[in-house]
Image (cartoon, rainbow, N blue to C red; front, top):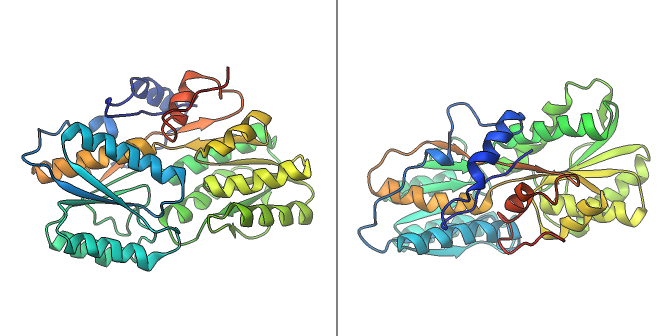
Length: 345
């Protein structure tokens, strides 16, 4: 399994080797016709200090702060300014829409957006582009993809790979699992359970128990949902948490119950690392949030400079497990989320 990069110092030297290894293992799943970060050209020195706006789903997750850190690094390298703005909650859609509209009114030179809802943000982005404000989406895009470019993990492909790993390595091709998602409205909230279900289709003796549940990005709600699952389905082998908060809740519930159920998930809140050490979390797909922020700024500069940019760019991912947690590749992947992370000696 394998990682990604770190940038502005510029991209981490492990990127090429680790991405190649991930592809060789069938763990990196680029969508058809998508480019990769290595295909992004280096922009020319900007003609002026442009002002960009980074608008993520919320300001409450380490994941989005990692996107910000990448954007800040690119801004420092290229002499531009990136203002960061996000709702306190990933469920406050009106606030995010207002932020995009206000950025256009303020006359920013470009917007980097992680859309809370792929349909609801269409009109604000159309307005931005009508005012000649380029828009790059990251992590969670629009439907249809009208932005100048979209940088993200192949969420369906990554979740399907995680499911196959889970079925083969953790479930021995049989048994019960459940899904706790974070919402059913964002593109990632839709894609990850879809991909996980697709990956499980090849295993006739594996069954999902109950409907997909939603933590609403609340660890405490995730604990409650998972505790109910453990009571209702005592033979449950695995809970899939579709993001960091949705994995942390079940991990806490399993640890408190001293149960045999195991958790797999997406992303790397540092609070998850002890659960990976202990084996409660057996696998997590780590994305490239730092790179998403970094290369989104680079893409904005390319658009402004009149270059053709790919409509879709797949960022690499890494499958973190207790077995590879201490590896250099895992450390590089975790540092996408927490640049100062140091593995335990």
